[in-house]
Length: 449
Figure 1 (cartoon, one colour):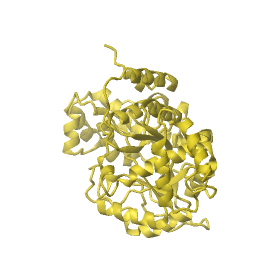
Figure 2 (cartoon, rainbow, N blue to C red; figure 1 turned 45 degrees about the horizontal axis):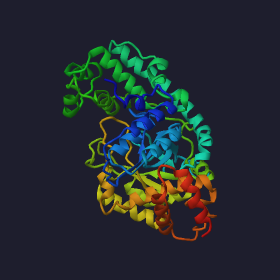
Figure 3 (cartoon, rainbow, N blue to C red; figure 1 turned 120 degrees about the horizontal axis):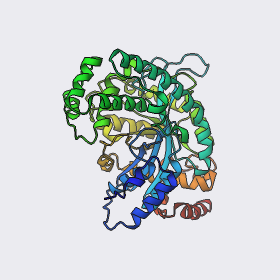
Figure 4 (cartoon, rainbow, N blue to C red; figure 1 turned 90 degrees about the vertical axis):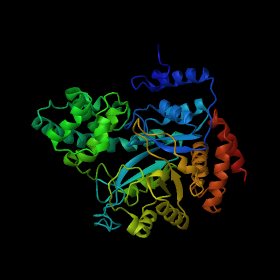
């Protein structure tokens, strides 16, 4: 029997075909989806690394009861058009952005700055920072693609060198080598403006191991004898289950934590450009640059990170740096930190006039699309800022001066909290099946303020 979901999540089809399949599937839907009030602005797609096409990401979000969903891919904006169209088909709020790693290594004078040797929010690299650019106006999408292209090219070059290191390990272990074009490039959507990440390389490694050893207990044992890895008892148990539907992603996780450090090559300044270059670009197109908070990891709430210190000890100094480098928002994930960490973070955001954006990065089939934490009283405002983000993205696409942070905005003199509340209300008033049309009417009303 044919699975009607398959065309929606087929990476080989063009986006238009997936959207047609989604529209057909939605037209045949009979069950009523109960909305939870949850949102997620940080869903990865096949255009970086994920088991989901933009259409499937939107469908999974809607079927989980989410009221709004956003795509965020590494070094790529290629999912944006399909994601926005898919959300409109499904009648949920949609927004788009991208994620990059940038440099905090130099100060205003071009010399090494106070953050050059610190691990800030990047477990792999000192002086390098993860950030997102969100609320991107639709007319600016081609400019974003052009801006990101050189960064993707540099990352491909680095991944080629890491592939050679993997092949050295594989030869020592008696395994056949990987072919970059066949096993990694062709796995990605790089030819369509997508990014190539370390996870593509790890996935190629994982598939080679599965092909060689098969699924089951023997594979976990081979990780130890071939590479000296000691997977946790939990991972050993998961890899011992031959019918585990998430087998590939569980194996990728094991390789990421234990084997990636042996082959990882630090990005250069061409791949991780100074943060202010990205924030300046984002602001120039009416988008919102956001610092991605990680926070010190003690006992990880999600169990996916080892105990390690990051930015908490010097967060006030860091916020001064965020202001200097042009950030307008902070993005964070309520399930990933303690309540105390996030309440402190929220206080700094309020004091510094930074928008709070929430979204849990999804790049594995094992992850749930639900994030009930955003419905807790201390995080409930994050649903409001999501609708404000959606309104910003739609309105600035119609009138550039209607950006949340635009000095020409009729509401520019209002405190940020008031602007966010107004935009959240406008976001919720959008006709989600025809968001562009209703945004034009809302823009006219706002310009008449």
